[in-house]
Image: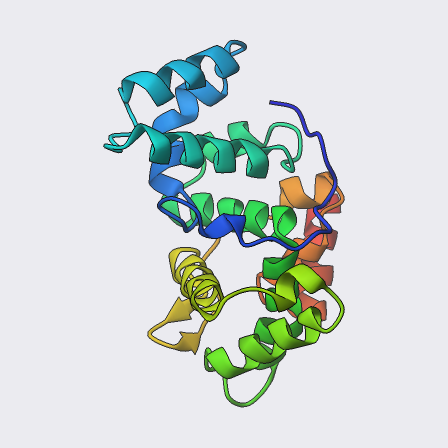
Amino acid sequence: MNNLKTKNTTYSASFTTATGGLFLREISALLPLLVSPDHKELLANEIRENRVLQINAQSTRNKVVNEINKRLSFAFPDFLDVFEFSPKPEKALLLFYLALKSEQLLYDFHFDVTIPAWKGSNRVFDPFKYNMKMDEIGNKDYSVREWAESTRKQILKIYKRMLKEAGFLKEDILIKPVFREGFFYPFIQNKELWFLEACFLSQTEREKVIIDHKG
């Protein structure tokens, strides 16, 4: 599948759809279909036949596949090849990258609330601060301002779940995710250096990774 977009810049709550989260189980199950030249036809068949997703409702399967396709449209070239040969914790981090890149709200959450909390003395997931961020965005964006309270709660629930799935959160405490040496090389090669900071690497750590990649 080709890299079609650089980054989403509109706000949406669509990432809370269907089963939500990073879709690690679902993308892993769909991987042979996703890497096929006939992926569109194969995915359409899967929505109808439910051979690998094992999701009862066809409407939910359709939502899951649509959301996965949307996120993958922001992937760098060979993303799925990197994903296929990565250990499970890194697979989750790769999917977290897609979530941040495909959803402006999640990107803003992460860089404007989560990373400052990580750099601070109190590394706690604080729902109040994320609600404040939504209020701030809502002052400029009518669609965000009109979100129901139930939508806002679901957004926080899914973002928190993503943090846990990707290894950023234990209980309610922020932690640095686990990754191998060389994990960031594809991101450096594809000029996605912002994701190094997203993974809680300090400037010194980021510079070292970049130097090691060049070496």
